[in-house]
Length: 130
Image (tube, rainbow, N blue to C red):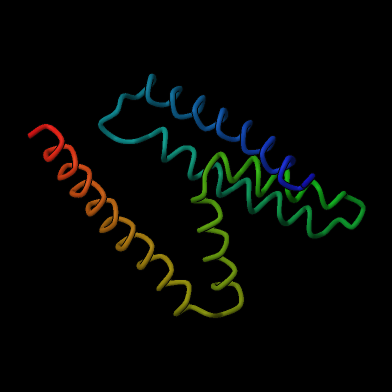
């Protein structure tokens, strides 16, 4: 049960950080280009690489930090970082096909499913307003 609490606390702070960074970049640069999301995804990708590398290398750090920081905080901040890290792991072990399929499949299918979700949402709203 404690693991869930630790993940939840980290997720709370990660979500607040995501909101803050996204709001900052949107306020500074506008919404035409999604700079807020871009900044969150890129910084989250850097953070997950840095944090996991350090946590794995150091045996003297409590395993609870793995729940708090990469799963909780960075997971609440952005799931894009987990996608990038998992793709890197495939690339690092020489499994280029899996790495490329993960990137292409996630982007193409992700876009397709956003589109399908929008179509479904519009259909629901159109039926409701009729």
